[in-house]
Length: 295
Ligand SMILES: Nc1ncnc2c1ncn2[C@@H]1O[C@H](COP(=O)(O)OP(=O)(O)OP(=O)(O)O)[C@@H](O)[C@H]1O
Image 1 (cartoon, helix red, strand yellow):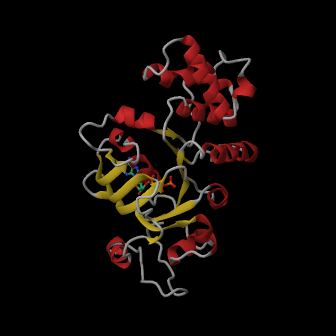
Image 2: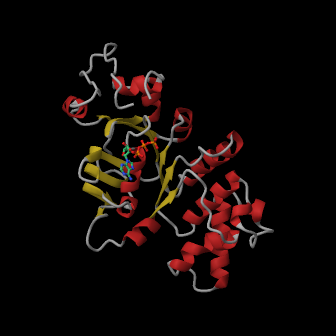
Image 3: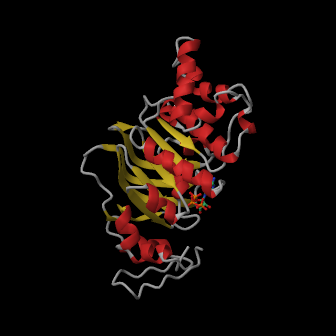
């Protein structure tokens, strides 16, 4: 994919060749900030990201100078060709990149005006505020109940068993799973179907009362019916949480998100209202991707 040369003839936008050496540098000079509406002017901003770069080791830069705001109670989709840095950027938001040897993040990332890299920040507490759901459902080898109770126990969120029961029930209810599992809470979480396991993972994330949920291709391992259930759930969860989702499905991004961010080779090319991105993309690279000419 990095060897592709992009046809820029249909729109009067700066030339960009990704071919071999210099492609990234040339592209960097063509972008005068991200096109669209990357900023929220401080209004209902949950995440404030400025000049974010990510490096793997000494030689590989995966994210280049990303600037964006993420709003409270919005669903924001991150799309782009494989390897463009969507997951890497997502992991910046709860410092999951800290767990990858050799990975280094620079720039300014604030959650509710707090520097997430500040000395006083405990990454474990940050990850409770900014939860994550992964591509492959990954329930713990524990009962359904214990999967959901794990986080609240770890963070001491329940004073007694009755309170813990309430948290487990309400989290499973919010994740749209309680009715299906209420008679088998002590059964293994791994015994559920793929779609149910993913909703269990969402319940586990919700159980510690996060403010933001990061989802990295949460439905790519699921069938269309389970996918539809999760998409409906995401729409409901938006009332209580900010949701950032990486997806390879443009239809999914169009269905569930209010804004969509298009990444290309580590650059945030365009961030705009989802409808604009899919009906009137402002950058040639976005248009190429959504029309299937690239990616
Ligand atoms: N642990 C790592 N060590 C070194 N390079 C990495 C690592 N993780 C990702 N990369 C590189 O960083 C770049 C961005 O990868 P990333 O997984 O963030 O892209 P992506 O857009 O999420 O891709 P996909 O859609 O295929 O999941 C790629 O070039 C990838 O090879």
